[in-house]
Amino acid sequence: MLAERATLPAAEWATYCALGRTGCSAPTSARVEVHRIVEY
Image (cartoon, rainbow, N blue to C red):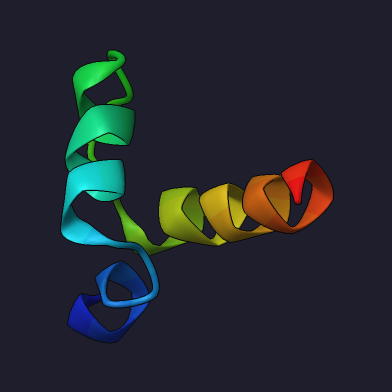
């Protein structure tokens, strides 16, 4: 799980978690990566 979390900048990860996402688990971070790829 730490390896998954390392794919996001700390501030970005904190912001994502603060948006009401529950758990911030490995599957969740994988979804964030996909979103970032699409967004950029």
